Amino acid sequence: MAAINRPFRVFQSMGNGYDIDVDTTMTAFPNIEPGIPARKHARLVVPGAEARAAIRPDVDWAFDFSFAFQPIVDVRSRDIVSYEALVRGPQGEPSRTVLDKVRLMDFPRFDSACHRRAIALAAQLRLPAKLNLNLAARNIAELKHVMTATHKACLECGFPMENIIVELVETGSQAGQAYLLQALRIVQALGFSTAIDDFGSGYSGLQLLVDHQPHYIKVDRHLIGGIQQDVVRQRIFLGFWRICNSLAIHVVAEGVELAGEYLWLQEAGVRYFQGNYFAPPAFEKLPEVSHRVYCG
Image 1 (cartoon, helix red, strand yellow):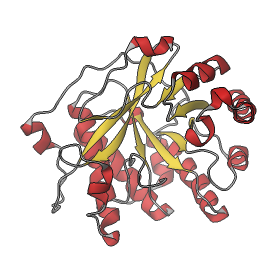
Image 2 (cartoon, helix red, strand yellow):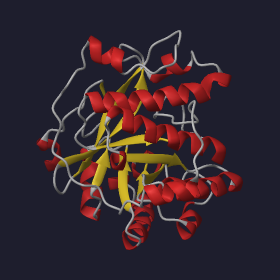
Image 3 (tube, helix red, strand yellow):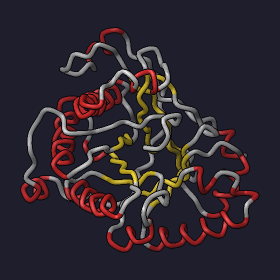
């Protein structure tokens, strides 16, 4: 992911488990059609002590951690269509207070615990929409373990697998880009929806779209920050948005903080938004979005 001062996204990695036979799994899990089904706003729900205990993974850690959730909205229907899970300390402390305690050699195991706990907490909160989880696996072997663990966690928690959106980050090298293409194809073949996070910040975003089209692309503040006052950003974004629209790729404007940014992007045709302007992340809750924000 990006700099540590940004909200940390959920890592998914190899877990403890099983390998995947991709050909067999493709038969069992057909591809999901692009598109986000609209869901109504969720109630604020806080899990009790028993629920907190139930979502702890089968791995002992010297520290506790949990998650906050931030909504992704459809501004046309004014519905929350998904939530992104963001790691936090046990009382809602910033992500860095958790990550600083994890040794480098333990990150694969920690990633697995994060993905399992995020799905379990989402199920406990009766999340009525999709769940965005980030994928941090660094090679195909890890990726196969990750997706097996993801599938297993969904079955154990009663969370619909088709409601998982796996976010992958565009990388800064040509080799990383080749891996990303493989990862996107495997994840989609297994029946999960895919998104590219921080699109355009890596090696060659448009080249990636030539080779593969994800379901969603998340455009971060490096492009949309202050876009209502920046003609260069506007022209770049409009060209990119038209390409995605013609390829049936959903664009999510991420990190929207100002009414002016939202209003310009909405007028340009953007449908899906995420950012503090709509609702900041809420610790162990599914925050609602006030209908007043849609009016600017």
